[in-house]
Length: 364
Ligand code: ADP
Ligand code: MG
Image (cartoon, rainbow, N blue to C red; front, side, top):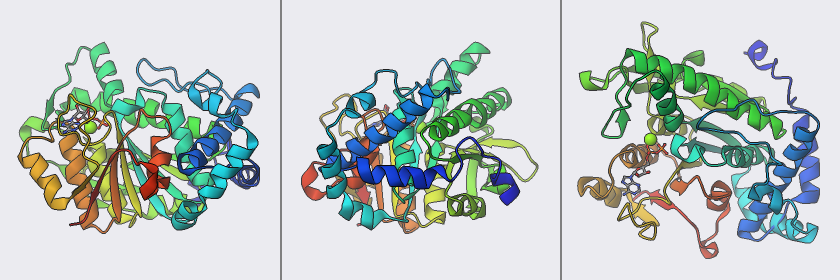
């Protein structure tokens, strides 16, 4: 295991203490501000490393990991006056103290990833630098669709799950475990936080069997999570970044819905928080009306929303897997808009008074 982890030399673990030392000078804030300022710091650091010659590794059609000095709003936030940064950091102490050392499983959906993915990835890196234990499970739907189109395959979905024939599985494997996973790891490394890219295949992380549905093809159902490989990475101060391709007992690749895989991982690790980042503000009563957000719903209410057809398509696996994560003992589950700048930080550091965004699904 150590031999596997050691070669991550582009961002040695020693950079974490340096980041910790620097952040005590730079971070601060009001509820959202801690976060904004903290993210600003990470962005500024990343911009510096870009200038030193650290280049982004990915130039895809769909998911583009822009350098931190590309003019997005993170860099503007880096101009926050020092006293505001200090205030943001100071005001975040209760949340930081509560979450210190906690496992937070974040599913970053492909739909949200199309918009400024580097910003969210740096926010996850920041959580690691602040002493939380983030695990990032990612999708890559639009990127997969883009590559399917290049080879003349039409994407098809049933109940929010991708119909995966043998050719589609090849593309899913290459895109998710290759370009998307390593692009995220490289972006996090450039932000000064070491990450390790994994898939469900590595170390047998996701145990899976083919679903009993001929129509779906090579879609995997999670039968277990081998958390050792994740724990080993977390113990070394690495952020695990997980692509949700698994292998069956015969060694065939299976495509596992990333929401479902993330929930299984959250349950296995007894995560404190489980956050799904997607391309809508949360569960909407009317999917065409962004103002119809349902902020809080309990287990029974969430099941009713599925039965009534309010929750449909790709939102179905999200809601059902929040419910299963709660059953597995996860304390809080959230569905948030991954396109919103620093939505992840806002959700984790929100207080009752700070006007939280997104949907929280909680135990009855
Ligand atoms: P991801 O890549 O994040 O998994 P998906 O496309 O699989 O994204 O799932 C999110 C989609 O679910 C939304 O873009 C929306 O079209 C759909 N959806 C269906 N019902 C709802 C609902 N009630 N509220 C919000 N989104 C919904
Ligand atoms: Mg989805």
